[in-house]
Image (tube, rainbow, N blue to C red; front, side, top):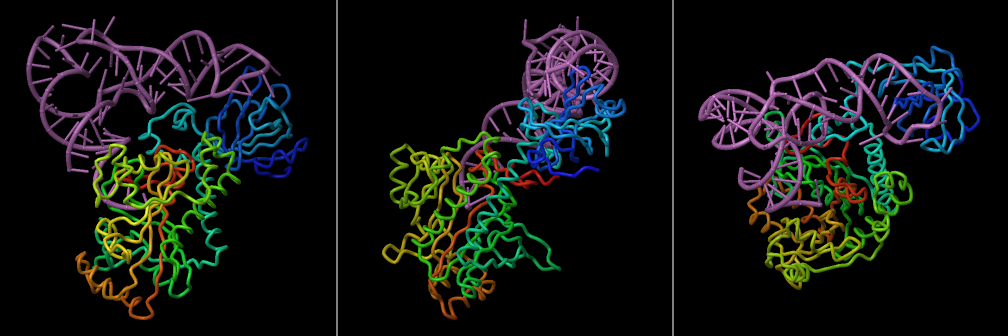
Length: 434
RNA sequence: UCCUCGGUAGCUCAAUGGUAGAGCAUCCGGCUGUUAACCGGAGGGUUCCAGGUUCGAGUCCUGGCCGAGGAGCCA
């Protein structure tokens, strides 16, 4: 058998005989010449099977190919500008590994489909070129995040998925039966990150997080992935610089290495190219004034709604950072601003083009007495937080960090309408399958 | 949970209260350079479910189920 190659590398084998294996993407037929499009996950190539040029059985097998049948094809690679991809394969032999029966054909055709149908067939939908492109960008974004922190001396410290109590108390959690004891699926690695920061200085965790909110919007999943850095001795300004550098670095990497995928997704690249530090910084107070000037109902003390976030970000061509929200709308562990105790040293990063909040974080409350007070004010079970209070009993230290939601970042960078396409198997309100 | 919209062939959709339709997919035929190929033909229906109004309901009414978009909340 000639050399088995990945389709993405066919350009290196022009003039040579090679074997590829994959699935039939589509078959175009014109009389006695067939054009099977073969994909193998790495790329796609148009095959050519001409009657008279191949053995009759090869032609017949090719003619009977059905969409997504698995196959192995051998032939000579030839550069041809008529072919999608620039090269095509003059097939000389063809082995059908599994022919999809024509009375039960592949359900996803090259035509349009509705979102429910596609979601029900997510396991097959992933094979489409668009979904493959998104998977590629997602992979690159995750790799870029890891590289960013690894290159800066951060240590990855994994935080648990099962947790004994709420990290933030307010949000709804998924409850699980943990050997007759109540446990919850984590909604953030944040508190454990703080423990890890005291051990390794700079840490991050990256894993799935769970929110049992009955949110039904294009920005919400019940299971999503979050990357959360935490830095010992960092203050709010350090956190903001880290956030804008991370976001810029990730966007630059996607543009550098995944341009073909972004072009396939018809992403407007010029908008992404603006994403470079420094990002505009607005205090919450300034943001409220801007919003009121644009007709929002927002009052000082309230949190922003989705339309508020869009209104705010539309004034900029790069992400905008809003800092110092009122403490009352933020989590109990946020440090207050010493100059204005009613606001928290926190920051949200809002992506452009209406993609909303992609990062939330800030400086943590390092003072033992105040933290105890906050836990009581929020009616959190004190006992569950004793270990967390230990971090303030034994060498408390200023520190801060943030969480970045991977799916929202992927949606923004890919220019997608909905986060459901950013994760291989989305978990949403009313969708648990496949 | 609330608001709005939707559910008709495998898929995407059309059908003034009066015979259930098209494109794609599948099958058959034609075409040696197709690009979501094209051309001709065939098969394919519990109109989401249960009631109701009517001579007659895919269409109108009531209830339910399922889905989508948004709100609140959040990354």
